[in-house]
Length: 182
Length: 188
Image (tube, rainbow over all chains, first blue to last red; front, top):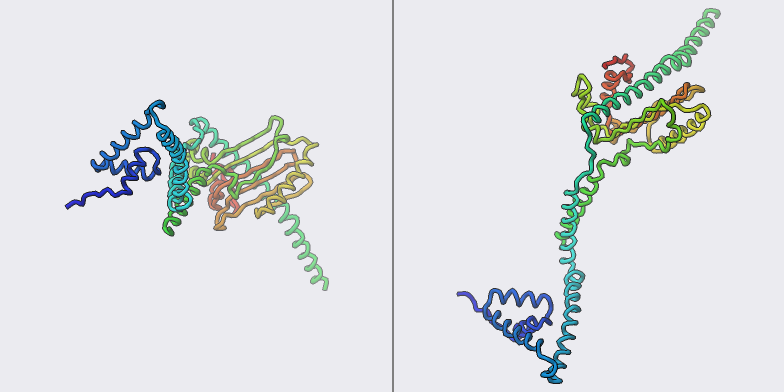
């Protein structure tokens, strides 16, 4: 059998606070969610909300000094509500690192998703441009080839022939002459 | 909590890699890239060849102008940039350009480029450098700088993974002298 939800004194206070709008954000959410599923809580909440509304629209001439003081209190409470909202956020994000870590993960995921969806600004080339580029690539290779060929010739003919082979040959001739003469 | 930190770290690494992937087109960070500096003051006159082809344009090439499409595609595959400046230098500016070439030489050697050719003659200067890739089997960059006796200066930087076998193919295909000393054959 389904267990009946019991409304405690503390919970009634929460409902009243929610109805007057002076409770914490989490209390308000909790009460409104409960009211959505529980008709009893919904009735109590609606009653207190109606009372809060009627108090709000009481004109000044009918209001007693005590009532005005209460209204003053109400205003102070509303100001405190903002303070409590920031306090709740501070508590959630700073004091409890799990929430802040979760927030960072969500931010990172969203940033990553946006980065992945960023269009790559690659220029579009026409067929003629690609064909021209191909010719330029070949021309580039030909320039490099010409330089390498010239260098290769210089190394094989000038350097190896004149500076290496010729002195060796000259040295060999001198040694042969020495042996012949000896 | 530990699991949460692990997840957070994983997400951070993923986001970082994605942001790095966005910078793929930046060839200046490639080890085979070399900045020749400002050559614009020398690049004047009519005989000027200036080629600057990036990886995106290279990737679009399928050898449509060539008889053997597959070979060409394979040759340019893996290249990130081809940059060529070829121009005539006035006689009074040649000394200054030579000084600039010597500065380049120092800069390249200090950045662990291998100088494979250095020809310094009264009428001709040639410097050729290669940047070995991490695996030492390929080269990740090629730099050529020359100043000929007729005043023609050429600066070339090819960036990307260049296989030595591919260079042999290039030499045969585009009148490129092969490194093994065999005669090259003009294909086009």
